[in-house]
Length: 477
Image (tube, rainbow, N blue to C red):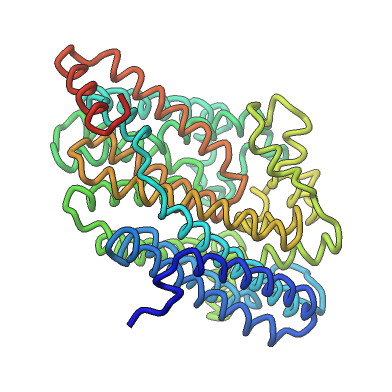
């Protein structure tokens, strides 16, 4: 039998906001009581799962959705990340109060997840994003594929040219140097901010376009499209950064799941495999880079760094103390300027701030620390920042869930592709990397708009007429 809160969504949301306020207050008062922080974190994680499952069942008719699945993995990520934080911290110096900082980071992450669940529930009550459906659904799939193939080739060519200039042949000839290939754009290895920016944009081109190319390669099995997919995949592996290949894999399998009308079960299996491969690759990479032996404890330490968000947030809190960034990283993220064109934007990016805080501001050989979007909210504005960032992120999650739910009802592959990209950007990139993912997301949206514009211009008149009819059908004409 449903509770009165379940029957009254407004009451549920009101109780959620009260719970967030009480949790923030308790986190402030009991910051030195580690067991209380951990207990409260577990309650928040469980509460977040109850809220999202209830919201999905009430508004979408089922609880087995991609949004609910992601929240489940995010909850597991927070719990396991906290459990492993002590192991992964052996590579850093955080002081004698490490356990308290990690417990505080656990509370912040859990509160952010609960706030996200509240925003998600709030957004699911709204209408489907018909205007976006109308804009994206009227695009010719064949022309969109051609545009994506061109972007994959262009991005691959730019990637190879940049790495060739930075000494690709030398690195490939010496396996001992493979571990540092991801840092060749830093000052220490003769690179520059311009090189880093160009390589990131090349990865954006490939990351946005490659999933559609691979999807069509699986369906058509044509020689040309398979060749383009292989070229893009190899080029994307050059920087040895896992986020972009993982993004491509997740987007591809969402597309395959939408085609077979069983997205949830397929993505569940894929994400489990991805997590195992991700953790194993982290362990192997760090193990090879450090030159350690086959000590099982050392292997556990290096593998645990595959989930660094709780550790990184606790580390940042310990170094910042009572200092707050006052929204600087969020302002930097929304500025319509690339970081290489603005000194203020570059110096106030989350990557630059966290790199500077841990004492590597002169070397810039790291990508900065990962705090999650809600952890970034905390270092900017305390617990108020956690709640605001969490609720806004949850609203975006709910919007992307509704877009996916609406898109799968139409046989428009480009629409599926766009909806899958939006979901991956928000659930994977934005959640884990925070505003460090801003350039990737903004660039990806521009590329989607460009693909849609070019595909419409190149489409024959029959397809244009079908696109207009589609816009009328979705109420966006």
